[in-house]
Length: 435
Image (cartoon, rainbow, N blue to C red; front, top):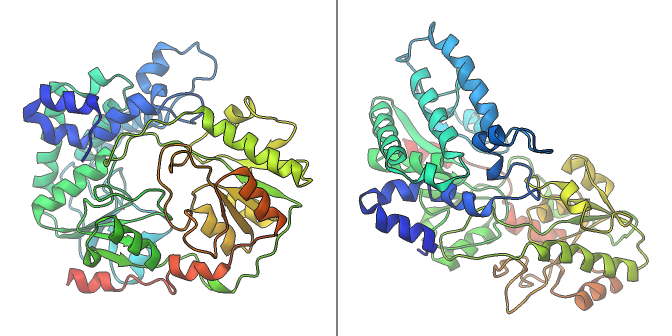
């Protein structure tokens, strides 16, 4: 595992707190990398920053500050609700995942409870839920000095012990998380490992990177398709650790007719990570994200396209892009992804799960991934199917190749979907594993 110099020094200075530093590594990274108006909710828009800079135009409250309001309201409820309330845990799992996965768990006879928050679907009692929220609020600070200190380390260690005691008394069968990098997910995985209970990561979509560290902190990794499983095995995962489920929303994926049509072009941005991954430190040039869009614009203009819609990643601010690109050519796409894809006639974009979604709706997707010294514009190696290894997915690595794809009216072959989304969706094996 590769740490940045910052994390290495913190571990050296706090040699007895390596566990706690590992748990908050994602938050430490965000203090350094999750910044700027490119993002909707950058780390610098924390509670402390918002209070100090309340007069600064454009600085709104973050998801963390909204969390504080929720915490404040809880003190009234807690007076009438015992912190030691009994949680019904008959055939229960803890799960906070995407795409109706909890509903699918219930279909096979399991009850899903959340490991954060309040209410009847939450596993924690009121006292512990509030303790979690307060700690998460403190971890939202943009100042590393407020995150990586003895007081915070002690609070994390105390919460870990509290959760160990709490969950040791509940008959919860397993834990399901959507990822394993943020603090709360790492903490829960650590707790369930010590308790000897099963844990799963139910992965969202097509990964843009594979390494042997991330997505590997649970007992099992659940992915959508066999090709994704193959990529993880090549990265060093054990084959028996990876389970293939499919996706509950995508059915009949292989029978889509794809045509080439430039009447309504949707462009997907090239995005940057908000934190470092665990295999190595990669520093990206933010300017490449703007250059990427100018590059696509040049090719489209040469093909007679006069305008295109731009769709940023959900974490990004479209207005930031419009200030730096040709807003006479690009207009900001503000529709839901489903409506946007139904309207589009072609999508041009980088490594993204939108490849699966656009193909599912019968829309062509041309992958555009310019390379420099074998790496993409943000310093990552390309991964299947965005690396050109699958002839069914058109990939261009420079402007001339993108022009060629358009000149030849290249289309994605929807048959590739069956390899990346198993049909039909099935997680019935979870019951057998928990028996």
